[in-house]
Amino acid sequence: MGVACFESVRKTYRRAGKHIVAVDCLSMSLNEGEIVGLVGPNGAGKSTLVKLLCGILSPTEGDVRTLGFIPSRQRQALAQHIGVVFGQRSSLWYNIPALESMLLMRDIYSIPRGAFSERLHEYSRLLGADHLLSVPVRKLSLGERMRCELLATVLHHPRLLILDEPTIGLDIAAKSAFREVIRNLASGLRTTVLLTTHDLQDVEKVCDRVVLINKGQKELDIAVSELLGASQQHVTIEVEEVPGAERLRESPFYREVRQGWLAFYLPRSRMSEFLQNVVDQFGDSARFRTGEPNLEDILYSYYHETA
Amino acid sequence: MRLLRLVLRYTRLSTEDLIQFPFGVAMKVVDTGFRVLFLYAFWYSVTSFGIAIPGWSQPEVLVLGGMGLVGGSICQLGFGFRDIAYAVVDGTLDVYLTRPVHPLFTVLAEKLGIFWVTSQFVSGLALVLIAARMGNLQLVNCVPSLLVLVTGCVAYQTMYGCLSLTSFWQGRVSSIRDTFFSVASARTYPIDVLPKSLGFALTWVIPIGLVATMPARILLGKVLNPWPVVSLSGLLAVGWVAVLSWLWEKALSGYESTGT
Image (cartoon, rainbow over all chains, first blue to last red; front, side, top):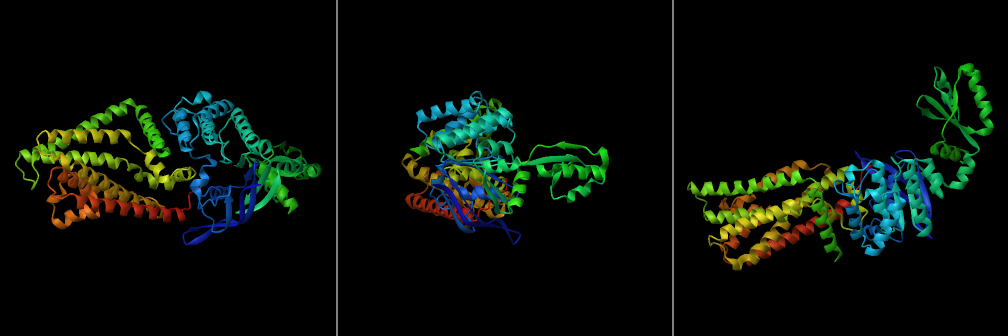
């Protein structure tokens, strides 16, 4: 059953008399209980898509439906059933203990007192935020604040949870707890989750499906299991950037410079050929290392291979 | 019921926010004391030196000052209109738009300055009661006076809200706001001593006369039949609320948000 659906959606902005296309003829849907990762480079149109989904923006063309509502016309009614975390914007009151903001959420979403207490206890424990509730938000670290932000967003059991870069700044333990809450919501309550992220671990550990957006268009829509299967056939090699190494940038496997190292993402079957080529050009002094796989490397590689 | 719960919740939040900084509260109390003292000293000096304010005796200008403070207290409830421009520019409005509560209510509620609302109300009421001991008030006029005060404040604040909403198109609008404030600072003086056309404009065009002078005149029995004023003031408030509502819809339909 489709929880949210975009049909041939186009969104343009007017800037200095020109129309800028943020989303172009995009169609996709989100199913009940599904966790979808929305990925793409900065300025790809991810945030615009999120805002269209919750009714902050109206589409220029096409149709958007969220939980049966037309978001731009029925925004307030829809808001009762969704939860949104904007990673850069807070819903918490800065100077006072986080618990007060949770109580505000109880009143905003009319959560029954009993259910509220149960959920607050359960999710704060799961997120490791129970000891943070009595602390003024201004005294929390970014990671602690994000835990409280997520807690405030899930208390009303939204049917659709939209998370815009929620794991930025979280430590490993907090990320793990965060992912567990997301999975519990999706499996237990059939909550649909849309997660925008640049973190491969988020996608790998939480998402069922990943959608790659670039220049306002959907470039890829694939099950994470399929994507990870394909990525195991590949390897990331980084070569130290030495004089003359810019020639290597012409390689079809070249991705980007990472702190003085040139990163290449290539099929394992081509690895020895690639390394031999580098040694031939730069001699035995050439330095290599295996780099961490990058989500966008995998996605772009997959996209170009299947296109 | 839910609205009442939210009003109580935001009042509590505002109070909690206030008491986090006890020294700040103490300074605000001192500030309020000075304001009231200066207001009293100003009018006492003006009238004691024999400077005539046509139609206003010494206790009557105290009533005016008191009504100005009570009006200021009611206007404080709309203080959040000031921050619409910031919410639009920094993207906070997006957070408000994802909640099942009217975003304008949220903007006003989150910026509720409970201290200023309470302190101005209490000190204004105290001034009015001090003047009442001198025997000038017509208690029978309390209701129409209060109605004009409330509707006048609604008209004045929604007009200000409309100016703030232009930030959806113009971005920062602090210069317009400052101009409006500079005109509005005249509200603590008796508007009816000004030339007739200016007094009319400052009562019915920019309704600052309705947030102090007119309610004070009604309370003092200087308006023979206050009900036409009550009606007009009510109509003005309804009119400005309608304009604000229309402008809000227009603003949202063209809202482009900010990046993240």
